[in-house]
Image (cartoon, rainbow, N blue to C red; front, side, top):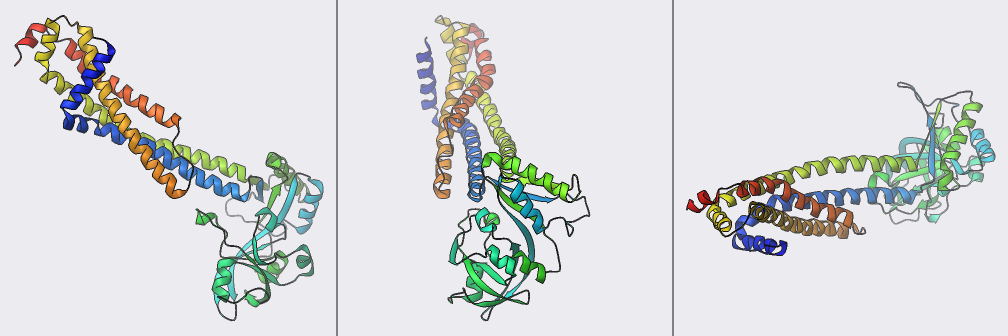
Length: 395
């Protein structure tokens, strides 16, 4: 018999034992589908996170104090003069701004809200690519003049003013009067934790005058290009250490490093979950071996007849081995169909490009065939070792 005849014989056996074949391949179907879905979900999560980060800009970086446990950023770690010097001496730095966070109450005539207040500079709107819905963002002139102005996120403005036009209205920011000069457009984000909604932005000079914390938390900047981020960070760090005579006191971190961390974490999580999903493949393979052993027992007389008609041990071995491979391959195909279908549904609802590629499908199919060989070899070998006379006597 040639390979084609062996495959047709195996398919005929599957057709005659539909229920048993379905139950046998169920573990393979579930295992292959689970592996594909896990990879698809992992890719979906990674794509969403990276897409969100890239929307912020891959040329962003932060400079913060590398304090030890129990220590915090201290007054004098950063000054406005530092920023001016860095901008002048480091051509790789395009924008640089101080950042200062605080929680506080903002009150209008029609509402009030405890929210996150960010003290920063005019460069912030360029670094974060802020979209102004109404009015404007504060300028360097506002900072220099010490004007008490505030820019609100769209959601915060709605809570404070409702249907009224907020621009030009007066509010109290931590008890200090300020004028609303702009509204930032609400950002559409798949990851709410990364969305800067429901914040209030004020010039850092205003915040320094209304906060108990009289210092800058960290510096936030962007490089001229993605390729120059590391030069911008390193030179900025060096200048700060020299100006403050504090070697090793400052640390830098970029969005590119954040993306690399996300890639590593999602890859590790995907591998762990894939290994767990692979257990079902192992269980499915054991099920195939058990069914093939039962099949050998049931078809002992058939094996004896084939041997009596001239079939060699190699022919019997190939017959049962190919039958196991075909059984697992059919299960693998159904598993691929289920996995790809599930991935397509995920892709559709998350509005993402296709999440499954040939490098996922092809190994999955080959792996199902390998399972057939591995778990079908013992039953096939057992069948080939039967004595023809003893086999013919079996009822």
